[in-house]
Length: 280
Image (tube, rainbow, N blue to C red; front, side, top):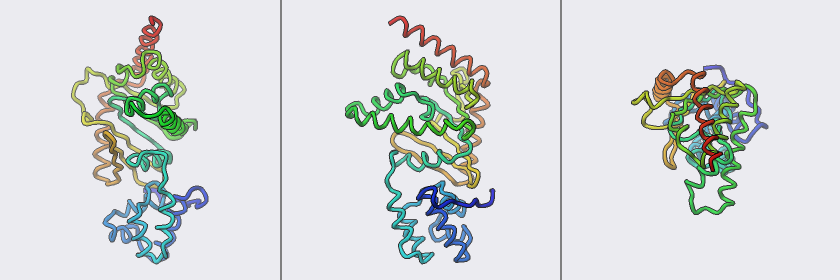
């Protein structure tokens, strides 16, 4: 793992907490493993907190105050960080995603959030919350599109996505919206901003049949894996678990079509949707 980077405490409240945690730990003469032991977490987890990748929880903050004689500093600042625009189960993953150097994702059913267009995202959120006021849906869509702005940087993060063929074939929001959504992905590929592969139906059984998977790496912290389901999500930093997730992704990637063939299929399906939309 790379050595610790210098944190700029003014860059974010989380960076402030991380910098202070590292300072107080080193002042106390403790290793990351030493500090993690009383909390029953790994040294690498402490490193993730210090680098600002993981979100400090209140029970952890209170324990740090006790162990490091911080007089309530961590608890006070942890409380101030509680507010997030994302659902509780995804907030930490979204924040880690924004700091990642590389993101690799397998999507079995839906276009990943970072690649969704407004019409596509609106249809997804409306399906999730059929009776929600329009203002709630508007806010959810705006947050998702704002999150996708990390792709505005021409080089980072490096995003590699494997789309199940079901993602292309499931008509979310109708043919016109699907054509727009797939053209958006194709445009990102053609601009060399992302790498995309399609896992075809013909492959049958594959390593990730259990669901979606996201892997993230960082310049100054260990890699993370994120797995989610209906209203739940889990960020994994255990090295053995992350390695297993990486193997799963590698197997899926090996079963998928090449990027060139995948782009051709995406554009072909988009064209089919465009023809279908013209008939209405």
